[in-house]
Image 1 (cartoon, rainbow, N blue to C red):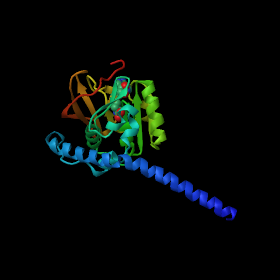
Image 2 (image 1 turned 90 degrees about the vertical axis):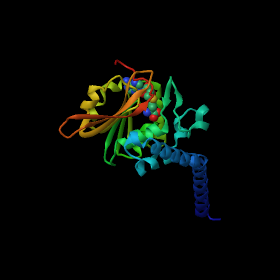
Image 3 (image 1 turned 60 degrees about the vertical axis):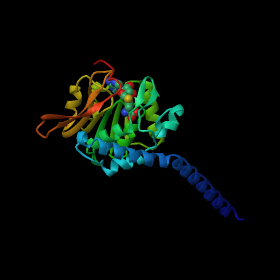
Image 4 (image 1 turned 180 degrees about the horizontal axis):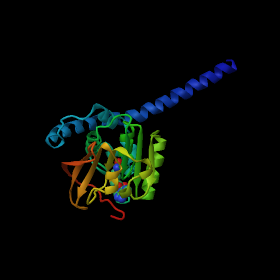
Length: 246
Ligand code: SAH
């Protein structure tokens, strides 16, 4: 065998090996993810009166069907990564139920060129779902080790259109404002005024508002083109509390 051929063969082998590894990684969970998407579709039909829609945008379902949720949970809960449930991610926090992630994302009616702000990065999963749909995602996490781990994970998985910052999300991210969409994933006692201010006219926010340890109402907030704020209650939810100065 001549030298160039040997190098060629090595390259082919390396390619085959990595393609096989990649396929195995996907296959192990692909069925579970497809099953999860079906469960979410059923759940959406059952709650269509609340949502005022009986199906989600195909792109949102595709994002849930492709983002590897098992990469966003600690190893001990990985076998349950595709259950339609919230799961513990450490520091007393949880990765949200996939149905909730799906409806919150869907209600944002995102367009590819949109810019979104998320409050409560947690594992980074909701940020990844948003990043699969739009150009730019900014996410703020108040617990530094969670935010740092999420940022590293998102980068490793190739979500390079997400920027994570450690801080109190109550104040939003002024330097990157205004946003087309703001997704708040911790329960607040009220809608933070700085977030309303950082929403574009025509922009939308989804936020659980209510008592910290009981259930809250998921609110869809719209800033109309004249600046007027219109809110609609979607459904009762249970999120971990918004912490920080408020
Ligand atoms: N979106 C996350 C779910 C996170 S749970 C995911 O997909 O995994 C809510 C997160 O909000 C927690 O990590 C919590 O630390 C964070 N949080 C609570 N109050 C906050 C605040 N004031 N600013 C930023 N993050 C906050």
